[in-house]
Amino acid sequence: MDLFFNLIGREAEPIAWWQMCVRAVIIFIYAVLLYRLLPRRAFLGSTAIDVIVLVLMGSSLSRALTGSAPLVPTLAATAAFALLYVALAAGARRSDRLSLLLKGRPLEVIRDGTVDRRAMAKAQLGWRDLEEELRLKGVESAEEVAVARIERNGSLSLRRRGEDDDEGG
Image (tube, rainbow, N blue to C red):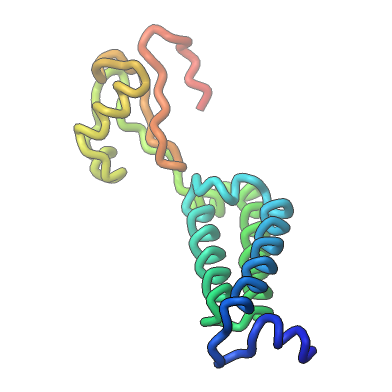
């Protein structure tokens, strides 16, 4: 065990550059394993829960890298974040209520060419932002849109007027 602590440094002591390098290798391998074990969407940052996992795991691992947090307990805590994410994501798949709580719901911002300013305010979406999103989708004005939603991941989805009348949800 002394060899291990000589390689990574001891708690509450400054670590040498080469100990930080050893930690970097350990953390890199650990992060790759987490990436392979967790669902891929966990690292897309597409919903609130995904962003939280990214921030917490990144923050924890960076502290372990620099030596401001003990390595092994921090790796264990990061594994706990990962397990909690997997459990909550599995629960959200089975429960609409949990899904809404963790991931939110889409907001309809345009219906039949009419912009819902309340929904835009709720999504904190400005008029110029909406115009930009429409242009990026090849739409010149809201009047061309049958329905547009700010999805749970923050992206805008839309269906043009005259396209398939079945919304699909």
